[in-house]
Image (cartoon, rainbow, N blue to C red):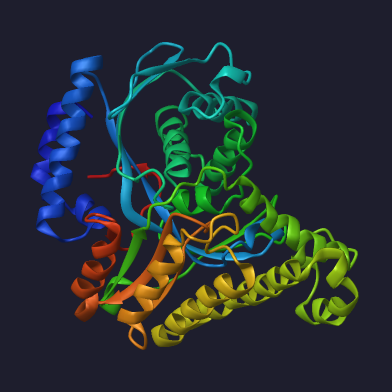
Length: 426
């Protein structure tokens, strides 16, 4: 589509596509209209006028199943309205050229798709790995130019990296493969690149939620073929807002804390002759507890209890939503949060008990929301974000209470959006 036509389609944010992506708030629609127009002007200034399209890839929120995926469990996750927006078009070369707002341009030459050690932990590594996997799977690749506005805040627990990965996959699918790469395949390719090119081990939940859109439940019993199911529920109709609060705190020096979670869980599974906890039952764990306490430690057993509880809770949360029983669902969100705190113990690091950003945020949430909403640790834990479902009547009070401690702008008021990574279809 020509840039002039795109300007008309944007229409200052007043269009159907934007309402589906960003809601009905007029200020938010205008903000995104300005955002997209700015991207278009930036693209023209850097790469000239050419046939282009807009693309979008949402962030994701984990709603159920805290630290269950790495032991082949179940999760419940949703795509959110904070997204990476992009304008992209073919450039007729063998080079991908990308500019992200606030970052210098980087190029990836498609003649060499082997991992480059010097690129570890960079966006270029992710792009190179995605292209390599596309080619290995028999898909077409080619050079394109792109300008990206990263609207998924880094460190927010909303998976900005996974959103970026499936955005690149969606662009390659649309520009060179007639859109035939399905969302789950796109997610698996993103995970492959992050594991093998970026240099970070990760599960598949984040990429799948960003690629699919909407509310989904994923069963990782066979991690090579995860079962993904859309959950038909309209969160907007409940009158509750989904609020993610960034409590601050650095994720640096937490690698050992994160690594201890799957290690502890798998240690308990090993005592039952299994590789992961999904292969055993809670009854089996309790039966061997007296014999394994000294071998694996009490914390490992508590984490195994958390896994079994949260893994089953995902099934019950999905059932409650499908029956439109939102009250029961909220109760299970709270139960999951308490399980993470008491049993999984991923709310504050044991190396620094003076700093408990997440614990304090959960306490403040309970003071405002008890009996009215729900709150829990969000994602990996130890630092970073919490999640809350807040009724409209308490939204101002909740945001004011949390931002009083964590600063203005620390609360992100979100909703679950239906579209995953793909072309913006005006």
